[in-house]
Length: 212
Ligand SMILES: O=C(O)c1ccccc1N[C@@H]1O[C@H](COP(=O)(O)O)[C@@H](O)[C@H]1O
Image (tube, rainbow, N blue to C red):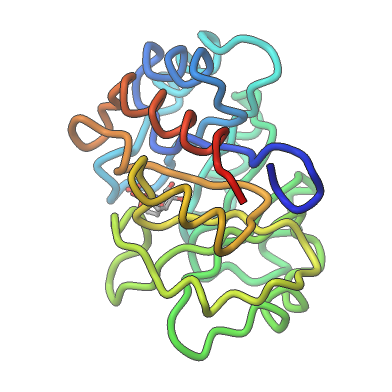
């Protein structure tokens, strides 16, 4: 449960195969993430993403992740796929995020000195902020946690926690940060881009059974 009394939402990111999307949904995931960042080992083509979206049951959100992508590419994805939410994982400005008229979350890559309040103010159009680990030269999917005490308890927008989460640390993360949701990629994989159904189930079990 998150501070509002609702359960902590779970997004399983970096899905590359329909069967992994089905496994995530069966385990209780609220959202799956499709990576449209060519440099990622989890990047998918439009065709792959279409097959994944088609395999999903109702009420599981489809999130399209971009990092400094060209607007034409983002528009193509929005035209061709049933995307519920955009995730901007790069250095996109608020104007760049707003231009699609589509719901989005903006990623903050957190390092010492990070100011969540200021970041919220910079992206008034975002429906949530995803906090991930800053690592020089890496856009995301680092598999590393950050110092969660850098996040304040009072927030203007829903906060999604990411970065190195797995079944062994997610309960502690939720108890400390009390996020709206959590996002995981590497922590539920058998290999890059290949999800492990048992790890997904274990992760969501931990999220749903956190005692605060
Ligand atoms: O997963 C990737 O390869 C990736 C590449 C570029 C930007 C973001 C990426 N993934 C996102 O990073 C966070 C944390 O991932 P992890 O759990 O530490 O592996 C998450 O939002 C991923 O979707």
